[in-house]
Length: 88
Image (cartoon, rainbow, N blue to C red; front, side, top):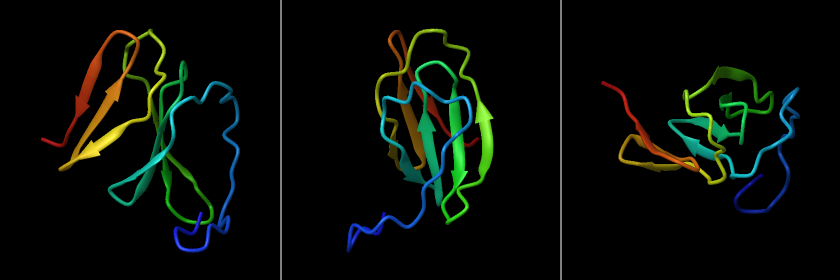
């Protein structure tokens, strides 16, 4: 979505993803989103929105919140844990 006009620039459906509760965010020039039960997706931030990575956190409780980015860290809250992901 164009932040100035609200125009939809690209749309994509991720196969098999049915429980997306949190909002996607833009972090590090990529779109990051978490599903309730299928893990994390990293997408290219262009009109193709290509899946660059699909990972699971190893936490079996649902993720119901949007991720938050701060100073290079990515925070994810599940039903049971608060996880911080960062580069070494």
